[in-house]
Length: 227
Image (cartoon, rainbow, N blue to C red):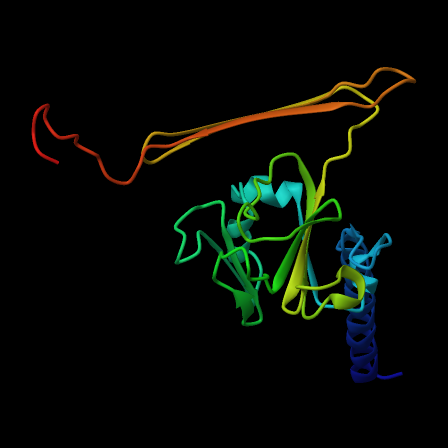
């Protein structure tokens, strides 16, 4: 073997070893970046969200806390193709949920009109838009199903369905407290506690308070002035 051949062989060997090392590092990185398993019940049974054959977005309680989401309407900022408005243009009340998924929804809050996006709390259907903007305190996860869901959820889900799964009391004592402040003297407080009775009962208690001033100051008429 001449000098030039030996140099070529050494250079080729170094490149081959470098390629093997890079491949090993990539395999290790892929193994470490394994997706976290999210279990949903969109099809009335527990299964991995990756195996559900429908368009679905699952929001966990960790995401709700990190994003400061306190009610359903704020989920519209976290989910594509979903528009959630607190307070119908006709009612102005924040308890009314105007929901549309993929452009299909209902804005009116009248009792004789059915919503196009169904809202469920632990499988219980909320039949009207009034009161549908639920507070998301003590929630385990929220599943937003896009597209018609009449097969599994029944009527009034032509646009989709929003399923709220609340927290299940644990077998060990657990306490969570949260406090928030903001503009207009906003003062929010929430407290959740799991208090099991060993071998007898699982129990949970949740308390919250949300206080905020209005956007405008209301100045009353002076006494004796005509209104």
